[in-house]
Image (cartoon, rainbow, N blue to C red; front, top):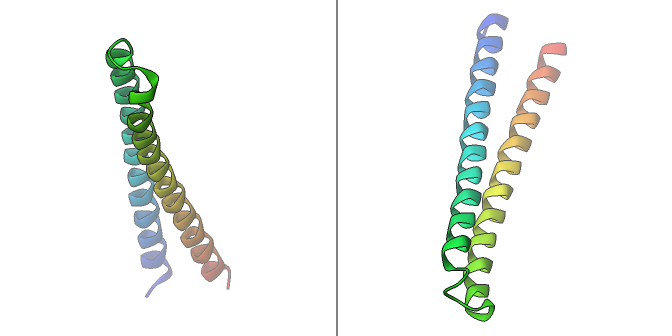
Amino acid sequence: VSYDQFDTTCEDLARGLDEAISKLTQQEAIWHQALDEVQREIEGKLDKFELGPIKDFVNNRLRTLQERLRSIAEERREKEAAGTKKMLS
């Protein structure tokens, strides 16, 4: 594999990971917006006792999305670091 092919492949991979992270970030923003809308709609319809499980569910889903986003970002950094190490060798 030539240096140019390797470099191009690394750039393509980094670009793909950037796009995935961007999409996940957008999805997280959509989840937050949806949560805000749901909370506003049901604020007067349910008491806090009934709302608690729903809020916990949504918050758990948001945490899961954030963990996935962090994981993807960390994988990207590791792959970029590995690519840099190989190029320096």
